[in-house]
Length: 359
Image 1 (cartoon, helix red, strand yellow):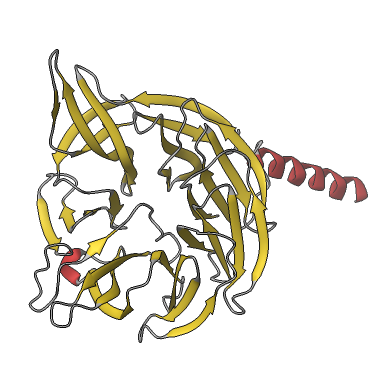
Image 2 (image 1 turned 90 degrees about the vertical axis):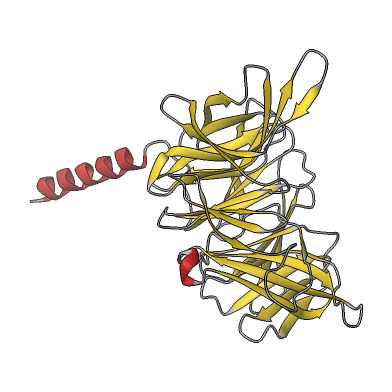
């Protein structure tokens, strides 16, 4: 009997070891952080410590995404937007590089995302220039659709100038391009199917808004929140607001919403919504916690040592992660709004990109 039990335990242990492979031991969340000089950091969300650093082929690691079917499969923009690299989190290594452009056309990708229903297609929001012998000609920006099997561009979807980020609706039927306004496209036909006016508002009585969106901070709530600011044309006072994109809905179901004048304009750079969508948090030189229904300020934290440009939240909504202000990540408790930990990450950073991946 003892020999049988022992043999069964050995088999179980072997199966678990094979299943885990050589992946790093991960918590329920991991933080992924791109750095300026060819470093991609992996942090354990339970221990709140760096557990791996992967070296990329190109410098300036910016926006990145992952395959929803295989969370270890990471795609990131490097070399100042001129290429996309695939990384393997489990093996902690670089896999391949997809170089953008060619045939006299220079391409710089600003953001990338995989099609949720077909992750073999990567959508890259890109700036393009044609380099001639005697001049450089700006081309219309486009979302380039790349087949990851062949590494070829299979579709070019032209978009307006001034766009910086791309979000896919979770069912894959639409993607959103954000910038001066929000443009919604059908990923198959490439046709624009909807629009939300931000800089060019379509709602009567709403003044033009200015927005700055560099990161996608939607992973835990399924809803993007982008801060905006404007000047009231009636009294010339400056005010702050935001708009949201609910990625669980279609644009025809009211996924986009502009909220103006939540208070006087003072500089906050980015915001994130809690997983239960009860609160949202904004940051730059201070952190604010607000009620998502009333927009009322519930708590603040003003003990930041410097400016932090981006903010993320854990999948259980208990921790805030501040980054984008150099090599440091600060961790705050969302109930007490007190600093829990400071992490100094490997590599050099200016405006780092980082996201929380739920395991």
